[in-house]
Amino acid sequence: MFRVIFHLDMDAFYASVEQRDNPQLLGKPVIVGAPPTQRGVVCAASYEARKFGIRSAIPSATAGRLCPSGIFVRPRMDRYREESQAIMRIVGESGAIIEQMSIDEAYLDFSGICQAADADASLFLGLPMARELKQRILRDRGLTATIGIAANKLLAKIASDHQKPDGLTLIPEKEKVQFLRPLPVHALYGVGKVTAQVLHQAGVSTVGDLQDYTGDLRALVGSFGPKLKQFAFGQDDRALELGDEIKSISGEETFLHDTDDRKVLRACMREQASDISARLKRRQLGAHTVQVKVRYGDFTTLTRQITVEDPLTEASEIYRLGCFLLGREKLVSRPLRLLGLGVASLREPSGRQLTLL
Image 1 (cartoon, rainbow, N blue to C red):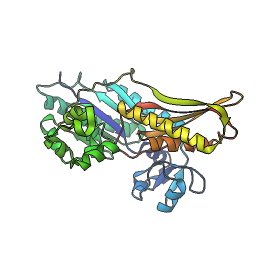
Image 2: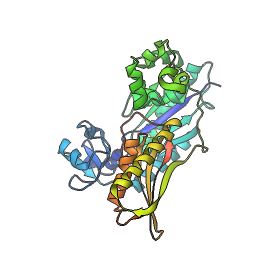
Image 3: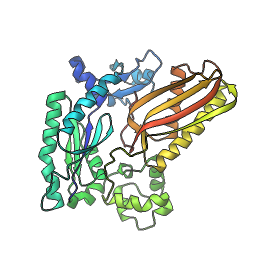
Image 4: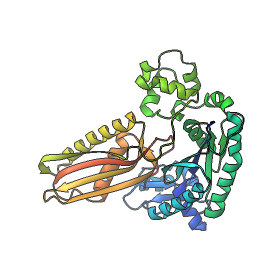
């Protein structure tokens, strides 16, 4: 059976929902997050706001300086979840096998529906189905989606990143090697900042450089080398994951004596973030949710979390959001008996900018 995989990605989902619900925001730089006059971070940005350099996790005050005309909107996570459920109901009616990656993203397997004489003919059978799916989401939900079509998850994801917003890209099997050649190495699944830096230092900047590399990639990236070579040629045998994947990664420390010493707590959280990041990278996963847990001397225990639209992998990002939660929620109001840090809602990382909620 020939594989036909779609990658569905809603366009600037949170900001687009706000623009749809309030037509006065259409075409304007919308920034989802705390207002610039208050302590907070940018959660998400419309395409109009991104042109000003607005990105996730930057302080709202900085965003206000970069984009004086920006319109700040408080995040409505319940509204975004409700919208996601409505979109996924539409997707479910397509007959595809679905792996929902996040609130605004999913892999769809149409292999059982689109079958023809060869692999590329099967892929092209998916084009009208993708157009119909995009049109129905636009008609019924008033939102645009980008879809990538290919014979595996790696290529389908790359295809959906190729033309945004409101794009539709198909990568034929016969053309996949040439399609990949000019792309930067970080476009490949599993290549994060550190791996990309190592490859750049070895003179490998594009996927074409990887295809042409004659040395042993294991000397550069360890055991990931053979798999990375396969990815460079568009080969990927990963199946859709339908519920057995790891759900969360966390760590916690109980102190010998209750403490509210900021230096001690920061050092503890940095170590936890570093360990979590390493475990995410070993599994080639990213996290949508960062959680903190505190326990006081009387055993009162509190947890708080922040959800992101795109996955986190770096220790510095996880640590920074953990500290943000501790500060925003004023959790270190008295000495702590225990401090914990964790991540959840795990999935493969993306090359897109992070957007926080």
